[in-house]
Image (cartoon, rainbow, N blue to C red; front, side, top):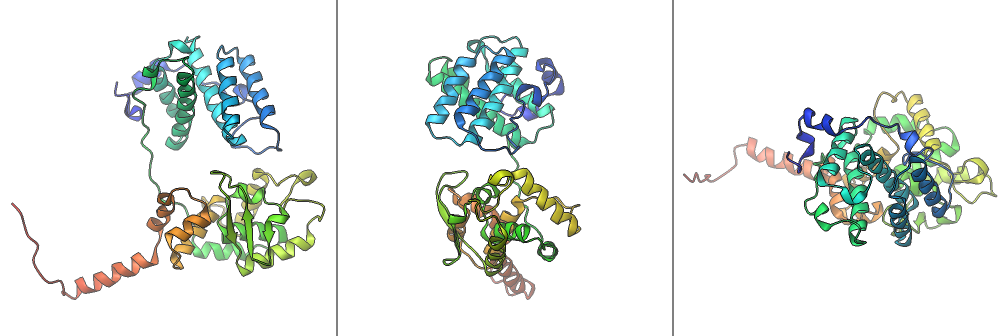
Length: 358
């Protein structure tokens, strides 16, 4: 078996390893990493995760507990802890169904079988990659703690990921979206995302005091992903929408966009707002998401002449290669240079000869 590229294994070898799939809600009820829930303490999350481990009768509870507390001490985000623990939970349930009661008996083939199992469930390569990374992080912690032998991770599996382009919203569709934004809160929410490039989680956690209309900016004191603060700027239409919303919102609520009992508006509610807007704009048949507003912002900034370095700062990317993906999507400068060069070619003004080396 070629364990470096498990996605090309034969279906026969896969089904030899795979126990029946267990429903997600029975493993980790109420803790879907994609779902939104009221804020709670990380320690409460850890306690709930450990309770689920006990319910499943998994023998690795003490190792998982040590790992979760280590993540907490390293100041990992609560959502990161929940997401990683869910992947670890799936892995432990899987290896238990294989008959592996003790973690010390794990082999590289067991990890490969888990990856194949997730692929057979129809998960996207990026999701399988995320699950595998979480499992490797857990196993590496156990290796550092002298629970597992280092040879287990001597040759890691690799999932080849597609390098797809970001999905930006077409300019004509943006016009249709803006035309149906009549509700003050919804207009402020969508325009702020579209004009600042903020992640939806960052905006939903923004407080009124983070908004500085005088300086025309929003201060993000702790970015959602890399914990690095930054400042984003507001366009005139976004400022106007926010001013109108501030006059209507509950002045006793600290959050800029809030839900039940003044808590931050949850992601599911924001997604429902965006879905209603897509329906009104007759764009529901297109695969647009809230995150597409961030992609659209980045693409429009590049087309407007902004440098990659400045855009990187505004988006909060730690690696400029992430920002460079938008230059592949659309870049007027590159387009103009192409047609300028093509005009010279079409006029037959290319001089010289190409050397053919035999």
